[in-house]
Image (tube, one colour):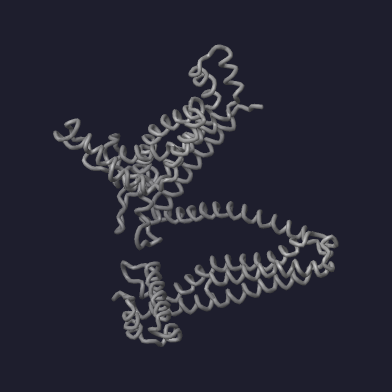
Length: 492
């Protein structure tokens, strides 16, 4: 049974359990809710949760583990002689999955029966012909061993899905029967349901924490594999970035880190003044009508997808900078300092525009948290409005503003699409903002694009870059929280 329909069946069983459990409790109390220990709805919720939650937990765990186990099992079935020079086991497994999907499509369209698709005795030429009939092409490098592995892959998937359906259904029916049998007037349904809800809340919080830990551990393990193949001294202290999948690669993070910080600094130079001044105006000078109109318009910038900003950088900002700096005698300045639309300045300007609502919203909330009594006291002593803002409001809100700037810096350092389309792809040290450079996020995308072999340093370096970027942004976030908490004024 497809997973979607299985989930629908579980939901239907849960809904039925709610009404049946509620009705059984009322029947046990002769229809008088006052004779029940708990409200009737608690009895229904107890049956519904007992039928739904354990089954969904088993289903989720099964869906996570089954692909891993099948991949490992099928990979061990592939003979070593299939792994030729220039080919890895990971690439062969990609062919296995592709052929298995073709077999599923052939069965779905009636080109072959399920038994023919799963039989290891099926001739390779026959399979190729049947898949060709429905438009599934097999490359010339696909060998019969790959076909047999694909057939095993498909069979294991089908068997695993069937077993999963049976186990999940039994868990749902077992939970339903157990909870329904316990339902009677003296059963403490409210206590059980509230404890169950508490367990679900704890599970949700734990999943969020465990997901973060899992992400970090996955990067740590792959980074360890990278440093086992490539010297860490070259990564942290080298001076060039030149990946070469044929070997002898220079994989230093320093040129990428320089480009990342350069673009981020330009972005902050744009976003911080504009965002801070916008926040001061909206919180201190604008009327209620103007604020109600301008603040939502400003925050629309935060809802624009970053790919749109990337297109804006590539098609609008970049050509405008080229026209200003890079067209020689035909340009506005009569110089040719910029050779293309991609540059550090292009990406920095557009990223700064993207960060304006981020800085503005945080700073606005922080400034509004300053008590009105401090403003009134300053004005009562004869200070003007601008003097009150400069000498009272901003200093009182400064720790929070600094924290907002550091959080914006973390956002800038981790940005991807704008720098992919606006900054270029050249890793080098240069102080010229009109030249194209690259960043850490750009190189991560590049190294993991296409058919990748997660056993080469040129691919594993992406995880080392990601872990370094994670540590850098985490440090900025921790510093921002420290500054806010240490220097925050406590107001009554």
